[in-house]
Image (cartoon, rainbow, N blue to C red; front, side):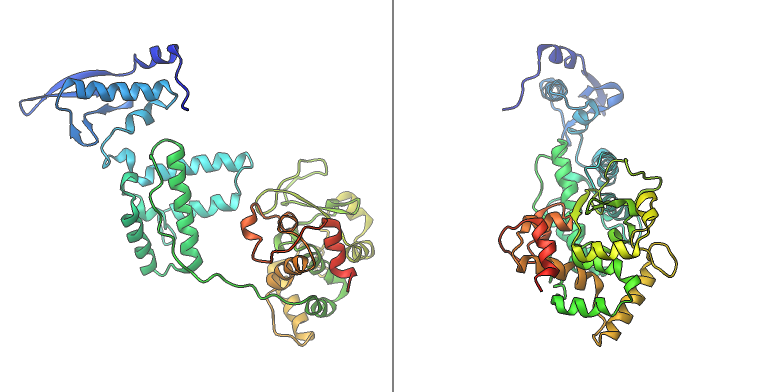
Length: 386
């Protein structure tokens, strides 16, 4: 049940706005005047025919203000649907401001915000900006379907079109939560064939890993054993390894050992147990001063610095050639294949979600649907059980 505003809130709201009159083309017109917050001349585009009509809208707006709605928003709600106040481009800007605040508080991923900004900016990738001149009240199923067709004509298809539609759906949901729209209109979700990762058996992983020189093997080994993303493995610092655990987080300039944990792709940290094989590699190849003072935990031995995408790719391709295998995709061969193997050996979706760092469980079921086990036994059993 909606909370009723207190008497004091009503008294304050009743001072907001008044009914005025004006003669237009020889006819008396009534309107609700809210000073710097604007004027309401009509009921969603239909001019007021009498003072009681204008007063009813005035009372409705005052009621919204008494219940806590910002004054400008309470007034704009009653402006004609064609008003500039209701244009998509305006509300996209306000949504981006809200997303920036969510990123600053750790509720949203910075990568998500960057993608939405690209879509909301005029240009070749301004997929949401295409809707800018339209009214948010005109975004019904037909309008959204026409928008999708227009994007498809410019070559946008498949999962990208699905993702952009998801961004628009999030925007519409935000409009409802802020009280601008009463409900989310039906969204026409496009169909697409989801990419199926190329999954390999542990024996194939082992052949490729053995073909990589031992000093270079660490970064590939941690991805194969713990299912890390490329960026996560490259960013690991020597101080992230302690007490047989890895603290997986996003690299930050000036980060100290005692600084708060920060997430990775979605700014959520993970603390993972280190299997014996990986611990042995670290003990043999990582200097003690790196573990105490910092530096790349798995550097490119040729440069002593973090791996670059080019160096990583060339080393991987050469290893595939040495192992007499076609050049496989490292992300799928290491991360996806490892996750699938975990579940084949008894890990639950919840455990795999925690190990891989998925924000929700929706991305995890692609690997398999098996029973619950302990994290320690999963990463240990992966290699030790043969």
